[in-house]
Each structure stands twice: as structure tokens, then as C-alpha cells.
Image (tube, rainbow, N blue to C red; front, side, top):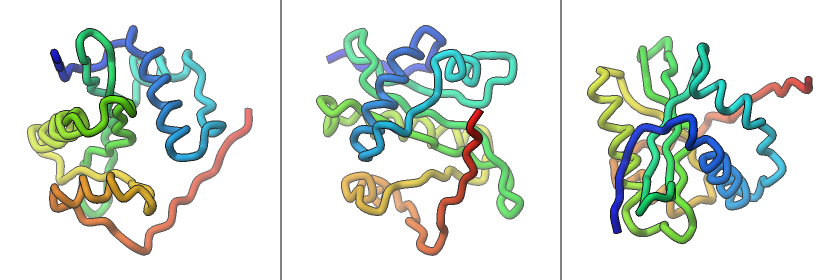
Amino acid sequence: MGIQIRKARIDDCPRLLELIKELAEYEQAPNEVTVSMDEFEAAGFGPDAVWKAYVADVDGRIEGMALYYIRYSTWKGRRLYLEDIIVTEKQRGKGLGKLLFDKVLDLSKEKGYSGMVWQVLDWNEPAIKFYKNYGAAIEDGWLNASVTHHN
């Protein structure tokens, strides 16, 4: 199996959106993905791009992705925020998630950021175990908050 971890390109966006929808299914929220392809492409590759990603290409097909951006903590400074790490169901357990996670973690170190942060659902035991293998702190006490604009 030929595995290549590389930076995402704009022509990868349709496949990345498929992976995002697969994750939404896994997280039992399939109707929550409302981003359009135009918005997704512009947000990643337009003049005001806000995200970047690495993809796991397996024999010419994208089977995983890690989408991230830089956030700023008033307490800690610049930190890399891992928005999503996704591996297709058929490729889970083969090391793609580790390769993607390591690539993003290494980038955060290379750039001199104060760390890397992300969220994990409290019921996702395989993911929690994976992150704990890295010595990650899984915090209690913080609740997610959001406002959604309906245009």
C-alpha cells in the first residue's frame, strides 16, 4: 500500500467534503454539515483562506485528512487548532490517523507554537485512547458555545 501524507490542494475539496460528511455520520449528526463547496474551497484556498489540511493519499485515493488552523490564546499565545482528523472507516486501524496527527503535531513544533489543541467527543473512546497515547490532557469543565447565523 502506497501512503503519502501531503498538503491538501483545491482539487481535493470534493473528496475532503465527502470525508467530513462521513465523520458527521459517525458522530450521529449527518444534517449538521451545511457548508457549500464554494465556501469550503474559498475558506481553504481563497484570498482570505482560514484553514489548511494534510491528506493521507493511499494508492491515489484520499483516505484521511487533518484540517487545522492557527488560533490565538491570550494565555498561551499561538496554538495550532486541529479542527478534524478523519480516516475512512475501511482504513481505520492501519496507522493513517497516527501519520496525520504526527504531521500536524510536528508542524506546530516547527512553527514554534505553544501547543496544539482539539476537541474529542466524550463517548469516542477509541479517539480518547489514541490521544492519551500522546500524553494529551483531556479537560473537564469546558462547555462548547456557539451562535449560528442563518443567512
